[in-house]
Image (cartoon, rainbow, N blue to C red; front, side, top):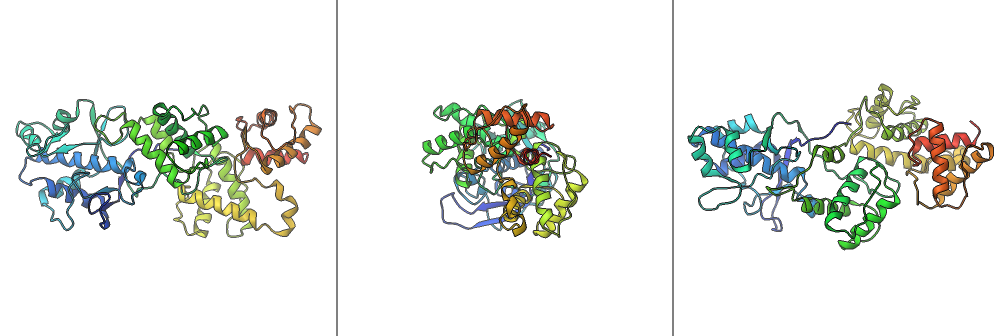
Length: 449
């Protein structure tokens, strides 16, 4: 899975007023937004290199707001405001200056970053005459351009020598980081790793939040405990479930402790971005997530004649996987890209749950053999654990190389040791977590297969 570095969004949603002001939201193409801002704040007769430097600052400022979901993390339904007291000056129906528009057309997919950081720079600026600030002076940039300074030299004069420009950033629709469903005990994916990373960083400022020592993709009891403490501290209902409200509260506090929307931000590194933006599965990808995807697709296709059953059984996204994904997307009205993005993954999970709920009567005698739809791990309890332990007990009756199990509904150390032994013996990821592939193999072994 590729790192999703900042993109240039195709559109941006602007609130026509201060954040809490009753005003309309409008959505327009991103390049039109930058042309509007630049035409509202800059003079077309300025030196061209001053215009270029200012346009780069304006683009970076807007992208910083979008990339960090600054307003969504506070509960707002827009990307940025039109109020220059909070963001950048935007005037609805503003006429664009041709000279400025040409610069935007040439520069709209470029932005400023600090070295060793990923997020677009919070490129604070002011006019330099009526108001001053720590960032770029617009009139000061004119003086520097008249001295023969290049756009990058002008920007370095204000933002420091450790900045650089990203060129030719991809232009794509912006996607919320929230996966579209509650993230809870038994969930897995890179979005879980992101939650763990963010909670651990917040915990440095709020030490009452227990550290999460497991950096895997699995939402474990340890993760649930940290989420509950976070919810307690910040006056949220203590469910241990990361719903949309908790997700964006975590995002807001993470942005706050790292000063993401600040000229002197701690910043987001490439390593962190790998956690934040591994958002899709596609042809050629490998890993644990493919075990889950292939299991779900096989199960859905077995009961759905509209999806070809190609018996996927590897941890690789093959051509067969792609064919089944495209068939699934066509069936459920999703763009048939063959890529499992957040929307497709959410639909697959829902389709699997629905398939289990309506299995034919002839299959009901085997209903306990169906994967329960969540990953099972140390510390979990419940009927799913009882079923798992019953299968393990049947295996232990036949094999002396499995540590053993007590059927008590508690995923204890003995249960974990037996799972680890089976995973090791069957070339499965040895992590002690029972995902779809491990569950399926345990069921087969309990039958003597």
